[in-house]
Image 1: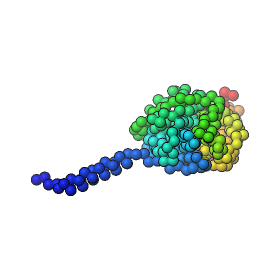
Image 2: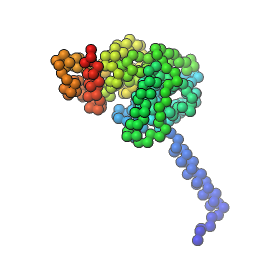
Image 3: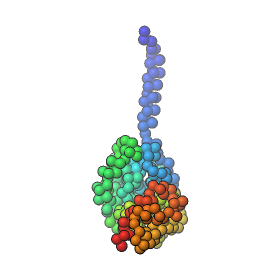
Image 4: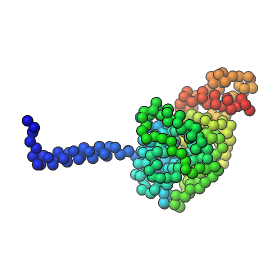
Amino acid sequence: MPRATTPGGAVAAALALLAILGAGAWAAEPVPLPVREIAPGVYVHEGVQAEATAENLGGIANVGFVVGAAAVAVIDTGGSAAFGERLRAAVRAVSELPIRYVINTHVHPDHVFGNAAFVADAPVFVGHARLPGALAARGAYYLDALPERLGAAAGTRVVAPTLTVADRLEIDLGGRLLRLTAHPTAHTDNDLTVQDAATGTLWLGDLLFRERIPVIDGSLKGWLEVTEELRRTAAARVVPGHGPVTADWPGALDPQERYLRALLDEIRAALAAGGRMEAAVETVGRAERGNWLLFDDYHARNVVTAFAELEWE
C-alpha cells in the first residue's frame, strides 16, 4: 500500500525537490576561469601547456580581458564555446560593464572558438583584415576536427570579425585606449597585437611562444622581420599566446628568435649543399629539442614549412 504523507511531510518533500532543482540549476552555471590581474584592470588566464583535450576544453592559449570605465574588451576566447562560457563568467565575476569588444589575435581555433559564448552580448568582434578570409578557408576544417579532440564541443562555431584592422586602430573602453596593430605575415598571415596604453601591457598572441615550441603557419622570414619590429615596441609587460606573462621585454623574444634563426640558417645550409627536405627534417634544429615543450609534435612540421619557403629564395 502507498504510504500516507502528512501535510508537513508534503512541504518537506516539496522543499527537498526545490533544493535538488536549485542545485542542478546552479551546477549548470559555468564556473569562472581563474584569472590573474597582472596590471590594474588587465586580467589573464594562462592556458595549459598541452594539446587541446576534452578535459581542458581547448583552453591551451592565454586569454583575458581589459576593463575600462565604460566597457570591457575580451582578448582571445579559447578553443571551444564551453571554455568561452567560463571566460565570460570570469568577466562577469569582475565587472558588469558591457562586453563591447571581442578581439581575436589570429585564426587558430584555440584563440577564436570561444567567440560563440559572447554572441549574446552583441559585441564588436575585431580581427586582422585577413582574418575573415582565413576563417572562411579553414573554419569548416577546424570544426570538423574538433570532435576528435574535444568530443561534442556543443555550441562551438565560427564567429567572424565585424570590424577588421588593416594597419592600426584605437579602441576606447572609457578613458582607456587599446592600440591594435595588424602585422605582415609571420606566425600566420593575420596576426594582430593589442596594447593597453594605460599600463603598457602588450598582448602578442602567437607572435610570442614561451616554453611551448613556436609553430610556423605563415612565413619564417616574415616572423623574424616582425620580431625585429616588435623589439622596438616599448612595453611594461607582455602576454604571449602561450606561456607565462613576463616583464622581461624584449628579452622574452630571445629563445623564440634563437629557434627560428636556427631553422633559417640550417635549412639554408642544407639547401646550399643540395640537401633534400626529408633529410632536413631529421637534422635541422635538433639541438633545440630540450628547450621546448611539444617539440616532437611540431618541430618536423616547422622544418617542412620553412624548407618549402626557403627553397624558392
